[in-house]
Length: 424
Image (cartoon, rainbow, N blue to C red; front, top):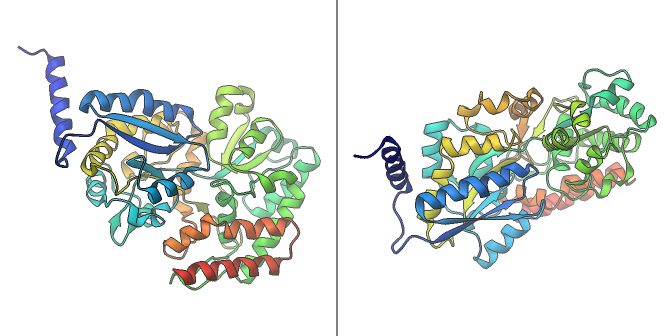
């Protein structure tokens, strides 16, 4: 007679085998690889390698290789894999990248529907990033929010106990803090998250728009954009370190943890690291939603998703792995390992226990309500992804901060955008 443990083991294996679905003709693959950008939350990567990958291999006999790339290099690596049609079968994607690789990615609508029925529904805001011509080309797992990260103790030194509600109020506080030797540090270089993460919301909050809802008409040349550019120039000159012009996504983390800056725009990784390695700093670090401008408050949507390359030798096996990974047992534990760094796009996790241990993470969940994809209000497209990849909006602001006239930087960005949107 089987023991209860043996019965449960067999049940799990049979259930997993059923969930794996049909396979391609021939034997199952001995291994598959998953391409990811290294997470700022080390435990997130470690949980995949030491827990999830090993469990799946034990369950199916298929070895899952985790291939991390350095921060900021995932898009380049994906491009190489897509062009050569060789490499990892499964890849993580960011922002609206599936639009750049539509022809190279498998339709996973069946999986999206299954997952949505079990754990959803999906957040409406994320579908624009991964659904192309009514086909899901990626399965989102979480949003990397970009919010204000600041030193509560230094803000109190200038009489501020609540984070400023508007950009102008934040500018005023930043002036005072810089005078006391505690400048701000907002990325203006060619990184991937922390530059777009505050510059798009700044543009939108002043009423500036990149492209119209038709996805063709470039709207950037406007009084609203000019006001956003003028503010950014003042914000940079009066509150920040000069070298932010060359920063990428790691620099503001290092500067904050090194106690060089008092405020930046970032994901929750700074607080995660501070609590672990610099507990005194962790106690005085907090988060706030982005300030609002004359036209409202906005945040950048940065959905992280998984896609399957069309060249995968066994697409069904790759789908089976993602079906297993997005089962609540696995996905929930993985998100917890990420310390709420990734805000899930499935409503079943709206009140997940992952949010309870640290109230300072809650704003990242709240920011989903006002988050938009780069290029909003235009529809997602290949051109929109290309615009972001070529830093059209980021460079407009950065050049203004370097001293170029407002009209000049806007005109250059408009020319670049018209070439991008006209070509598509």
